[in-house]
Image (cartoon, rainbow, N blue to C red):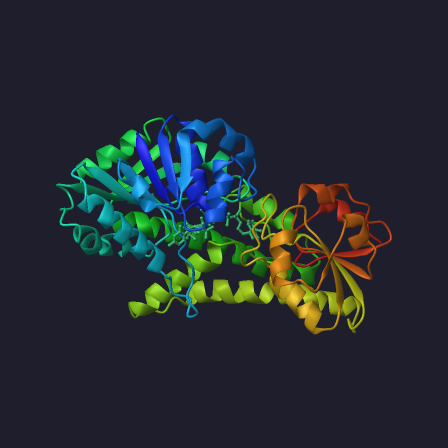
Length: 417
Ligand code: UDX
Ligand code: UDX
């Protein structure tokens, strides 16, 4: 099939590369020229395991451009543009609406039936709200074009693996014709396909991400209590996880969740609920705990070094999680910010995220891991595998992400275990 993908960020690019590697012809569109040029040179604009090789492999099937009209012959067009948070936490749908307007222009000029598929994470009701924009083309939904919503469940750092091995594929479809077209595209995926309504598919995404975020804040709350009882929360999580109703995954306590999805999606769901005169107290507390958790790390440091002014603090890990260069909502941001406000001198290392972090914090030093270890105290904020090979002997290490090798330090403390 010939597929269009609008928005070549973490989600759009993986979607484009994934479907291209399955033999489809894919045309990707993005507003960032630099990103387009890199993709056409088969250079990954983001760090993602296996992406460099995949981009080379799919090169003949994938072209990237800034020109939206290149999508005119696509049978399926995915919308994967950003859906950032507004100041009040509600979702900014302007890019999604802009994409719908651009697509409306395309379908106005052609009689070929095609399906528009929203993949960006959008609050329930959004996909249907695009219908009037798309019908401004003079074409009729159902007769001239189809509409679907297939939420993304990719985790950064394992995005390609998640694309090819999804637990489930959720397909919200406007009608049978849309459903048939989209399931034809996914035919190679034997995995569980779940067909549902457009806004149910939208809600499955929000409910899934909000549940996972809740699970993390839950284990962090348990961890904060366990720490005071000198109990290893990771042992507790192991015992809990043996109950299949609970499951061990997403019970790793630490400095909290970051990334471009959990914080944004929980905030958007809270805002949507309040718009509907609901008061999502549980979700609000999930976010409040997540905001407090990084500061526990600073307080723990001040227990060891009460006056941080002029002290050198080493920071290992800046990305919001391991195996990515993404620092969006990374828990390292509030921690570094608080340390700077206390007058500390910071030396940081991250295998992939230093360039992105430097844009926010040009004033701190970026060094080798060995150099970072040569500090008054060392904070571990991301659990990169490479951190398991460092020598922590004789150091003061405060661990926010459970790097076991660090336990050899002279003084080692976990934030919530
Ligand atoms: C994005 C959304 O943020 C997320 O909520 C949704 O689940 C999937 O799409 P991600 O790929 O991580 O996730 O976003 P981002 O990395 O910000 O990429 C968005 C891309 O869209 C960027 O490359 C941006 O340049 C592009 N874009 C944005 C357009 O091409 N056109 C626009 O009008 C706006
Ligand atoms: C998440 C969802 O997992 C994915 O399904 C969705 O499509 C996008 O959002 P992602 O944000 O890429 O994926 O990473 P994830 O592995 O979920 O981690 C998110 C954050 O939670 C990271 O900051 C991570 O450090 C933290 N986390 C994760 C914990 O603190 N504890 C855990 O047990 C798991």
